[in-house]
Length: 449
Image (cartoon, rainbow, N blue to C red; front, side, top):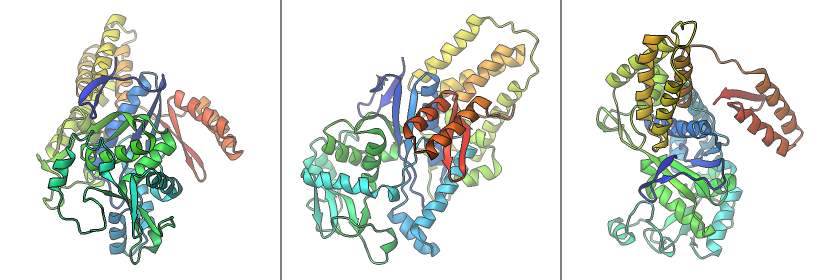
C-alpha cells in the first residue's frame, strides 16, 4: 500500500485518490524571469518521479504545472533588459523546457500561464468579494485573512504570532497587515502587463493564480498539490485560504513538499557566490548525474550539491550504463522468485513515501548482481527500475512504435476537426502506451514517459 507524507497532517497517510485509478496532480511552476536554478530542478525531478511511479502502479495521472509569467520580478528584469515583460517570460519558458528536457523530465499534461487565464482569475476574485472574504481599496483587492478561521492549518502557524511578527506595512489601506493581495492596480509604465477588471486596470497577486488555474484544470478538490518546502508559507497557505473560502471543500487531499538544496553545505544564495543554475551545472556535467544525485536522498530531506558530489555521482551513473551494456548469456538462470523479490523490494521502497534513496540502493544491488551473472532477466529488471526513476542510459535510441505514431496522427486529425472528446480519448491511449504527446504549432511531438 502506497503511503504519502502529507504536510497538512504531518503524517504518512495511505494514498487513496478521489476517483479510483485516477490521480489529479498540481505542482507550482517557476516564475519565469531568469534561468532555472538547481533548487527548481530538484523539485521537478521529484514530482516527475512521483508521477512516473504512480503510472507504474497503474494509475492514470493528470499532471498540471503552471508558469507565473506575470510578476514584479519579471517586470523589473524586463525593464533592466529593455524588453517587454511577456517577451521575457516567453523566452524564459523556452529555456525552462530546454533544461528540463536534458534532465528527462516528462512534459506535464497542461502548462497554464497567468497571462492566459485572466478571465478565471478575475471571476475567482469577484466570487471572494461577493462572499465577504475580500475587499477593494483604490483599485487593489485584498483577501481578509481573519475571515478564514482555519488560516495557518498547513504551516502550523498561529495567527496571533504571525501578527506579532509582521513589520509595519507601507500600505495603510489594508484592514489588517496579514491581508494579502489578490489584485494589484496598475502602476506607471505597467500598461504592457495590465488587464481590465471591475476594479480598474491591473494584474493578479501571486497566490490567486494557482487557486484559479488548479480549479480550472483539476476541479475544486484534487489529489496531490506539490511544490518546494519554501512554498508552504505563505504561498500554499494562502492558496488554501482562497480556494476553501470559495468552495467550502478541501483544495487538495495530499500536500507534498520537497526539501531544500544547499550548495557546499550552505544555503544557496547569489550573494554567497554559491548559486547555480541548471544551465551552469550541465555545461560540465552529465544531466543524469544531477538527476541521480537528487534521487539518492529522500525527497523531503535537504540535499547538498557540490562539484565533488556530482563527480562521484557521475561514476555511479556510469556503472548503471555499463551494466546495461553487458553482453548477456544465452539463457537466463536467475529464478523468477528472485526477480519477484527484487520487484517487491523496489515497490516497498517507493510505496514508503516515494523513497528513491532506497530504490537507488536496490538498483546498485542489481548492477552488482548483473555484473556477476550477465543475466538478461536482471538487465530487463534494471531497465524497468531506471525507467521509473527517469534515468536514461546510453544503451539504445528510443524509436516511437508505429502504433503510437498512428494514434498521434489520428489525434491530430480529431483536434483539427475540433472533436475534443475523441482527441482526449486518443491522448489517454497514447499515455497508456507509455508516451506523452505535446501539441506544437506545426503538429506534435512524442516523448517516452
